[in-house]
Image 1: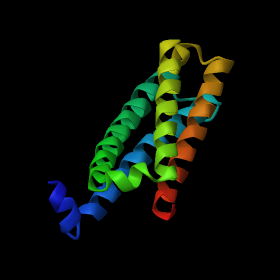
Image 2 (image 1 turned 120 degrees about the vertical axis):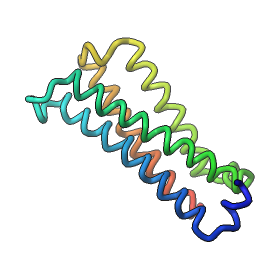
Image 3 (image 1 turned 180 degrees about the vertical axis):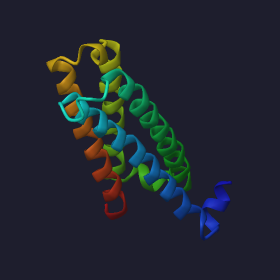
Length: 139
């Protein structure tokens, strides 16, 4: 399979498209849920929207992670030497820690000031992940 990623002319571009699709599902649903928490779409029940949007966001993360690992497998040494890639990986760890903290403290049920700050932090981290992902090709 790894050889096909390097030799088949369509394999890597399709993998990149799957990666972008996963990022879109993840980021789009996180922003959608955050908009609801900050008052937009007040007619939508928070709990129901959370189940739907966070489930789709998790599916998007799974797509992005799987495709990202496959892309990494094609040039691991070059990527590990790339500062943008390393920063992206550190930001992914930060996003995971923030999500674990958010869910671990029951922030979804509280939606207090700290929960809102965690949501804003999450969005900022994911924006930075996207920027770093784009910069990988240039640094």
